[in-house]
Length: 320
Image (cartoon, rainbow, N blue to C red):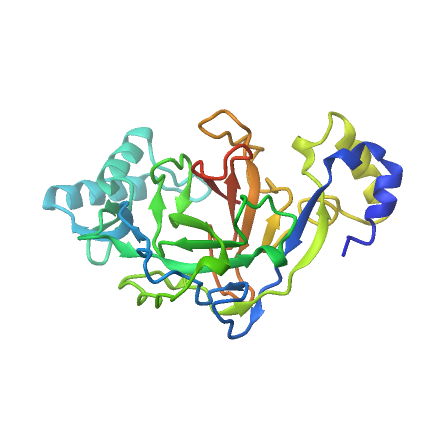
């Protein structure tokens, strides 16, 4: 399978050919997958003698804190002064000092002016052994052969903690679920373990509905900042003349995807490097909405990047 316009694009711009990457669009659809199938939200082929992963990193919880009498009076005094200054047509804004006062009172959160409580997200370390992770994706090598599979493996499993985390360990500028990856050989799995119950307090938007996959191999192209200098402007002109779009149509294909190129449609391009210095490559893209019913980053995409030199180096996560 390939984008219908891709051959014409490559004929017009041969310099794109070295940029091509093979990707697999996973195409999750409602179903009842078994442990030996590729799936989203299905039961993984998990060995009975292997401990189930638990998240021990702090996750974010909402807390409500009553304002002191002094804080409430400060807030109300600011609002009275603002109301007294207001005239039709005049900007109804705070002074720098008033804004600083309200910011200090909110302390990074918001204010419930009915209950007069400060509402904040704060990190809390889970008790005991942590929270059991939930299975999100299981992918067989037969369904995504173009991925760079570590020798002796043919099964990739992704689990995550169904809670939000603010910049968890090793993930700067990332907010979302903590992710755990496992590569294994399916034939080596004997007796399988049951999936632990969903942990209490799990966010529904991080609990995927069971889906089978309908994988389709495609050729993917990079977004503008990863193309050779000056090429994107010419491609964009070519595409506009044919009523086409390059981003997300001809290149950086969206949706659940294994391999390929990442889009940077919400932020500037960010080069993600491994701790060993290697430039990381896109491994997986997990989307919001659709059959799995997830919502990452306000209906965005969670992308998992892997070191091309050693697949066992820690992954990097990014949401667009």
